Image 1 (cartoon, helix red, strand yellow):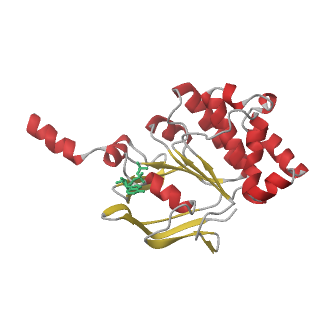
Image 2 (tube, helix red, strand yellow):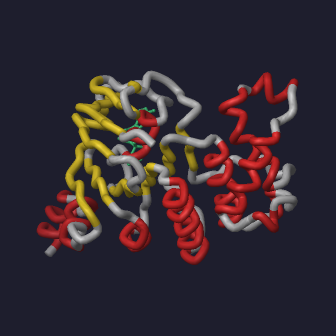
Image 3 (spheres, helix red, strand yellow):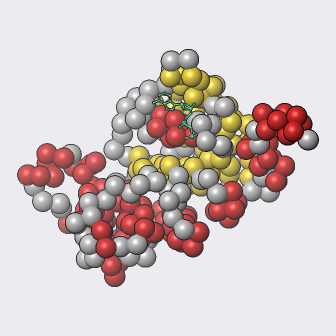
Length: 248
Ligand code: ADP
């Protein structure tokens, strides 16, 4: 798996600076958690990494290749899993192969054996092999999100991105989904970048943390470096401090 290099990356939406001169490199296989308050630029960064948005300035490289548009080798897990509820877990996982075969091809030809095997392996990785035939719509939110991870794994991605993957789950399901995501990434030596709202979950599962605030990197370090003071710095709103002073 190649390393990821983000170089002087900025993204503007009109007058809004969503990302402001962000740079970092991620060695292969690292599990990175993106932290930051709402509006910090986490989704924007993930969308740029995925080639779904174009940088205003700067560049992203996966190995030696610059990301210039949507790529089939980047897996994405969303807060909403976007599964086809009437299809089985297996069929949903299998659609991950569409990014490689192309949609038209997938309509006109059947999946090949290696895709089918990849779908079963991916479901096994997320602990759902026994539920492969279950209709996605009848599964719990946590199980559905695990199918979403399996679908991304079937893409055989060079990079796995997850945008608030457990934000809509209860704490127990959220922890379980994170555990499977982490072990899936470790098993495949898959570089992963996940944005997480819940600091406790982030602390439990991250190896490295990138803290964003107002579009800038305000922290980049390991779990040991991520003290509560640093977490406060990333999330704490100065305006609140000023307001607190006025109100006190
Ligand atoms: P986060 O994911 O950390 O909540 P976002 O990346 O969604 O932050 O947003 C960063 C900033 O960019 C915010 O001020 C947001 O309003 C703005 N923004 C994000 N996407 C768009 C867009 N498509 N058009 C205009 N502004 C946007």
